[in-house]
Structure formats: structure tokens, C-alpha cells
Image (cartoon, rainbow over all chains, first blue to last red; front, side, top):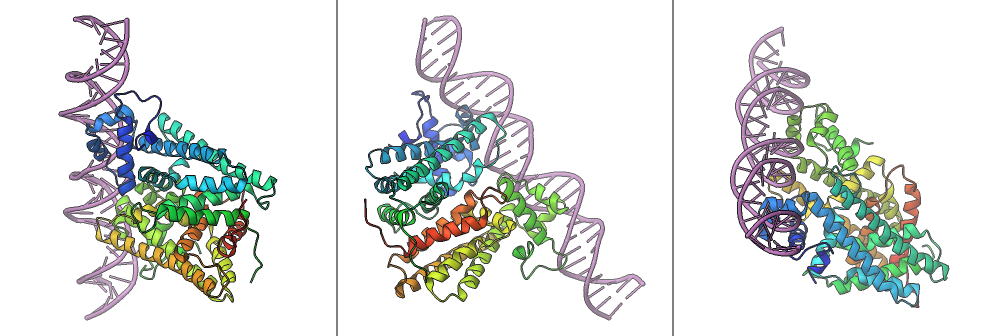
Length: 214
Length: 214
DNA sequence: CAATCAAACTGAACTCAGCTCAGTTTTCTG
DNA sequence: CAGAAAACTGAGCTGAGTTCAGTTTGATTG
């Protein structure tokens, strides 16, 4: 499963692309993108530094690819999780739980995505990097749209009070992905515990009525 | 006010330290830390590149200083805002509102803090950088503690249902600071609108009861 | 008003991670 | 086996970040 999350259709059988991505996820996740030496990634895969450039135009291109694949997986996981839900509340719970049903490697991938999300703001100089960046931006918009649509349905059905769906979607996402800033696999808290806690927070945020002030 | 947020006691009258910090906040905020050329900061201040090293040991040292001052301001703002609150609900609202009562420059500073928070995870090689990093970590812990303490008081007073205060504090913070990932000054949404929206989310999250499932 | 000293600053040169280039080896295909 | 494409390599280039060995500025003091 650890390789699947980093594989694409156009990777041939001899391709070391998934292995490079896996090594890069390890490095970027452990010490951060900037602090990672590109040559360290090459060493872990067992190839020369220059061989990396057969697969990626640059270190940044590799990072953007990791981010895109992470977003692709998040998008797919959301759809799969919410497909069979009979109500919007149920779909909401399923969506949040799906966001935390990840392998340690996928957790790293999400942390990397979260840590380097600012990279998507500004245009890239090279074409392939810019292509990946655009793909990431579209996927971010898609993921936001998925959540907003879920909320809109729930509001239309009267399950959730009417509130701005886009802002609510962004807030939910902020809450859900914010966990990757502090969660570490093997830490004191189980991912399952966090998942349950955040699910509760999301449900109250979305479905809850304002309690009386004071 | 734009300079105050970046000034410290030990800056002499001739010191260009605050000016360098202000220029760095602009650059790091606009194009990101990594994409910013250190020499560009020197140009904006109107000094040679090497003069920067009279004030900062490195580009990273400058970034860590910006982050520390941002955290210091957040901590101070929280205390000031919640000092006069007569109830925990009121304190909660005041704390969230204070988190968004910022000048455009301080918004940038918070975005930078948020974007580069991962930098605080790993040890730094040089002493001065490591000192700043430790200070940042302590301030992060302090800010988390501020929120957790507010929640504990509210739970003890029966204003909020009992839930893990630390996890709740982290969730609130994730929700509040997550806004800096997408908010841009001069964008379609007013900061005031966002502040009100997030305040409502926080109150429901903390004070709300679980609604019936389905 | 020099003499002094620290703070502020500079141009030239160094470092090293990211990257290019020109060419070699390996594997697949007809 | 011939040819092509994919996979790879060592040597060297590049430029942002940094160091070094001084010079200038300006406040202070006898």
C-alpha cells in the first residue's frame, strides 16, 4: 500500500519514480523540504544524484508531485467515503473519518502538503513545475468544493443551519488538516482518538445551533 | 504601529534591525521564505548584503526572529483581550476576536509563522538560531496553554461540557490560524466577517452539545 | 577639538546544494 | 543482432548564502 499512494499510470516497470517519491516523502517529512539534501534522496534510492533529473526536473518538481498525489488521494478518499451515506450528517462523519484513515506514510505526505501549501501561491518558472502547481490548485479547489457541496446538501435538506458553505468548508478543512501540524505517528495520542475528537468538533460546528450567550 | 510589532528593547537608535525585519516580513509574506533572495531584503533596506550579518546570523535567524515576535504579540494580545472578561464564553469570544484584530503587516507576520511552523520541529545547527527556535517553541506552548486554561476554567464553571482541554485548545488554534492559509488582505472577504464566522464556529465547538445523530 | 572606541557597514572571495551537460550502459522491440 | 528508448553517470557549472579582512560613521570623553 505504501507504494500505491505514490504510483501513477505512466510509470513503467523499470521506473524508479515511485521509489524516489517514497524516499523523498521520508526525507521531507522527517527534516523538512528545505533541510533535505536532494543528494540524500538519491542515496536512499541507490542511484546517482543526476539520475534524479531523469524523473524530475528539480527538487521542487518532486515536492509538487508529492503534493499533487496527496491531494488526489484525499479527493478520492472523500468520494469513496461519502458515496454511500444516507444523510449529510452521516456523510460528514464519514468524510472526517476518511481524512484520518491513513498509513504513516500518507500521514507524512499530508504533513508535507500542509507544510508547503504556500508553494502553490506563486507562479513557477519552469513549465513542468507550473503544470504540477496548477494541478494542485485545481485539486485544492476540488476538495474544497467536495466539502462545500456536502454542506449545501445538508443545509438544503434542513439537517444543517444555513451558513456560508465555502467559508464553512474552509474552516472544516483547516480544523481537519491542522492536526498534521502537531500529530506524530507513535506519539502519545492514537489517530483514532484524534479522529473521533475532530469528528465531534466538526459536527458541532456544522450542525450545532448557537448556544445562549453568557 | 507597523514598526512597534517588530521592535525589541535592545535595539539602539541607529539600528536597522526593525527595518530589516519589516522588509523581510514583506518579502517572506509576498513570495515566501524560500523564494526570497536575502539580497533583495538588503536592497529594500538600502544596505549591502553583508551588512545584514551585523544584525542576523543568517536568513533563517531572521525568519525565526520574525516568528518569535509574532508569537510574542499573539501571547500578549490573548492576555490583554481576556483579562477583563466576566465569563469564559465571553473570554473565548474576546480571544478569537483578538486573534484577528491585526494590521496587514501583522497578518503577513502570522502567515509567515504559519507557513514555516515546521521549522521549529528540528534542531538548528547554530547557537543563535537554536536560541530563537527554543523561544518560539516555548511561546507556542504558552499560547496553547493560554487557550487550554481558558477552556479548563469554562469547564470547571460548567459553562463548557468537559472535553480534553489540550486537544480542544489545539483544535481551536488550528481553526483560528488556518485562516491565514487562504486569507489575503484586500481579498473578497473582510477580516471582520471572517472573525465573526470563526468566533461562531469556536463557540459551537467548545460550548455546543452533540446534536442528535441522523 | 582631537583621540578613541564600538557600532555600522563594505567589496571581494568562498561554499556547497541544486543543477546542466556530454556521453555511457542497460533493457526493450522488431 | 540492430536500433531505439530508457536509465544512468562523472565532471563541472551556477548562484544564493555566507565569511573575511578590513573601512567608515558617529557618539563619547579627556
